Length: 348
Image 1 (cartoon, one colour):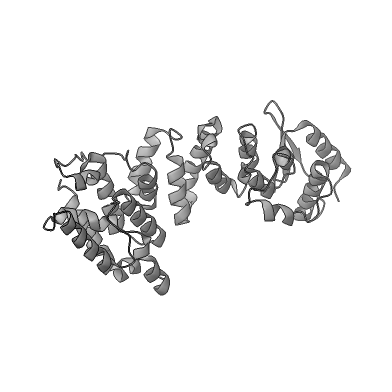
Image 2 (cartoon, one colour; image 1 turned 120 degrees about the vertical axis):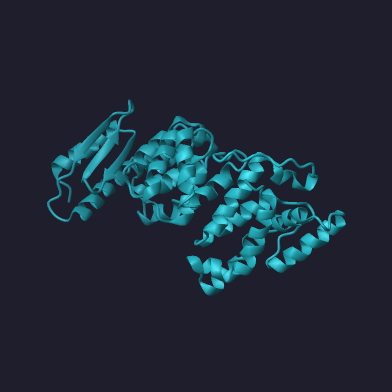
């Protein structure tokens, strides 16, 4: 049961705020006014603080949405499905529930009029990074001033992220446009030499604009089939991928690296296969059709054009591989790929 004082203050907060969030750790409710000023109410539970927070949320929901059957399961069911109407967006940002914020962030009706309110509501919540990553998948958010705020938060949050997929995705997303400074990109690139998940984000997002920190130069070749690897950026890409594969100890780093490699070196006469020997036969056959059967670089490029996660996913899944066991068990797949990369990378 809410105290009369808290009830009165909450009602005033609802009427004067455009967005509301609850800090469950500090036991405060924060409202944001139209002129972007924060107003804070300290709660005074006399018993179980969790139940008191629930009572606060019940009051907010009742005021903003009326009698909503199934709350909060209603929100959890819809929150990641994009099924929130535009008329509900503002109301959902005033009920102090993070699932409501996720619902708005995922809404197909999200627009730049409320994006700053969504990010404000996400601040200091356990889901802030998740919401930030999703928001940066929207082009209009990347171009919005709040986009840089989100990117810089995610950049600072990276050291506290353990999930490999999230590391890759976050790096990929914050490298869009000018969301982060060139200096920050350089630092992240250098950190990627140790934590290669960062490098996967680089080769996915800016594979044609990778940092050149070691004086890599283009190959002096005039061979059409090698145009995609002979440029300066092509050489940096191949060297980066070779570095990642040398240190592979995580399945999703491997999956996504192989997909980037096959995509960047794709060839109209090459198909992806699930076995490395099939790719080797295919590269030999296609090189013969091209009249370059004895050109080892051509065959290397054609081999790499067919690689993808299909080469390794079944083996990793079947044996539940992790860490250095991935490299050991897949040496028969990785070695031909690494040998092909060596043939295509100019010696320094």
